[in-house]
Image 1 (cartoon, rainbow, N blue to C red):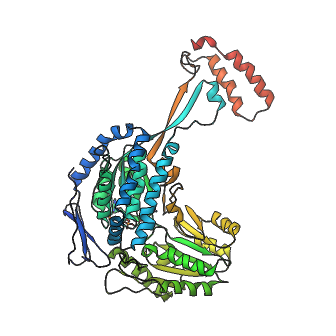
Image 2: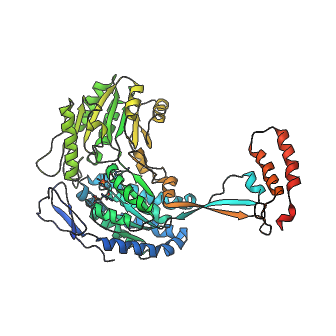
Image 3: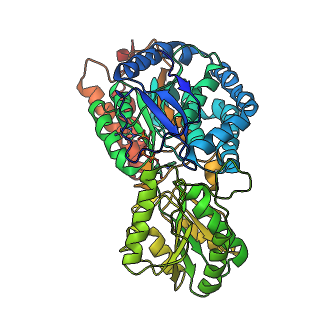
Length: 539
Ligand code: NDP
C-alpha cells in the first residue's frame, strides 16, 4: 500500500462550514481551530487501500505473533525514546489539530502514552501468561489437567476520536501489538496529522511490514475497515457512531471493545475544601475545552455550601485565559470543530429557554472556534444539557439536599463512565463512590485513572463496554484458549465406546459427590463406584 502523502503548510483557505469528506475525494485537510488556517493534508484511503492494508496485516500476523513476547516488548519499548525526541513537535501538532493548550498535550496525551509504554511493557508477560485454574477434584479423578493460554485475535482495527488523538492512537494499538496482533489505525478525520505522526514513529521501529498501518478518512473509511475482515475492533467515539460500528461488526460477528461518551457527575459534599474543590471541578469540566469523554458535565453540591462554592467556581472560570494553545500562558483553547461548537451552543440555548441561568460565559468569539466557558444554575433533567453529552466548556450546577439526593441524581443517567466525590472524609467519600454507577470514581480529583495504565478504563450503559488499560484491557486483545492435558495417555477413557450398564452405573454413582446429600450416601456411592469400575475397559 502506498504511504499517504502529507504536506504541512500554512494557507489562507477559510474553514469550510459544512465540510463533507469521503474516501473518493482524495485529500483530507487538517485545520487549526484557533486560526482556521490549514495545518496540512493527508491522502484519503480508498476502499481498495483499506482492503490491501487488511490483507497485508493478515500476512504479517503469523510472523509478528510468533516473535517471542520478550522481543515484541523490546521492540515497542523503543517508542519511548522516539516520542521523547519529538516531544515538542508532537505537542505542537496535537495543539494545532485539537486546539488544546500544549501543556495539556503534554500532561494528558504524551505523558500518559510514555507511562503506558513503561507499564504495559513491564506487565505484559504477567498479564498474558498462561494460567492454571484452581484444583478441581473431578477433573483430577478423570486424569485431566488444564491451563488457560491467551492467543491474539489476528488483525485489530483501531478507530479513534479527535479529542485525545495521540493518547488513543497509541493506547489500544500498543496493547494489541504486545498481545501479538497486527494493527490498522483509523484516526479521526479532524486529527489526521497526529495519526500520520503515529505512523512515522512506528515506522522507525522496523516492525515486520504490515504489522502497524494507518489508513485515513472519515466514517466511510471506518466502515470499510470493519467490513474488510478484521478480527477485532477497538472503537473509541460517540454512542451514536458506536451503533453504526456494531451494526456492521454484527455482519461478521466481529468482536468489539467500545469506549464511548460520558456525562460525568461531580458530587461535592458539605465538608469539601471549598477553594480546592472549586479549582478542581473547574479544571475537570473545562480541560481540553470540556471535550473529554470523562468531563465533569454535572455538578451536585450540598445546599449547605452551594452559594460559596458556586461563587468560587465562577471566579475560577472567569480567571481562565483563552487563546491559541501554542501560547504557554493560555488555559483554554477553542473547540476542535464546528460540529461540536454547534452542539454546545444548542445545549446552552435550550437550557436557557427552559429557565437555566448562565452565571458566566456561554458566548462565541469572532475569531476561531472559541466558546467562553460557562457556569449554569437552574438546570434540571428536562434539558439536554443535563442528559446528553455536551462535550464542551459548560458546568451546570445543582444544589442538593443531601448525599442521598446527590447519589440518586448522579446515577440518573444513561451514561456511566466516571464520577468524582469531593470530601475531606475519605471513608464517607468511598461509601458514596461504591454507590455510583460508573467505571471509575475519583475522590478529590477527576478521571485520573485514565492516566493509570495498570487500571482498567471503560464504562457501562451508553459509555460502552469492555475495557482498555490494565490487565483487563490487555485481555481485550486476546482470547482465552484452554489446553487440556491427559495424565494417563495409554489408557482408554471410561466414557468412550462401547457403552454398557456397568459404565452407566459408575457415572450414576459419581453424581452424588456433586450434591449436598448426607455423608452416608457418599460412602455408599464409593462402594458402587468400585463395583462398577470395569478396569478392562481402560486397555
Ligand atoms: P465519533 O463517534 O464521531 O468518531 C469516532 C471515530 O469513528 C472517528 O475516527 C470517526 O471518524 C469514526 N467514525 C465516524 N463514523 C463512523 C462509522 N459510521 N463507522 C465507523 N467509524 C466511524 O466521535 P468523535 O470523534 O466525535 O469523538 C468524541 C466522542 O468520543 C465523544 O462521545 C467522547 O465522549 C468519545 N470518547 C470516549 C472516550 C472513552 O475513553 N470512553 C475517550 C475519548 C472520546 P471521523 O472523525 O473521521 O468522522
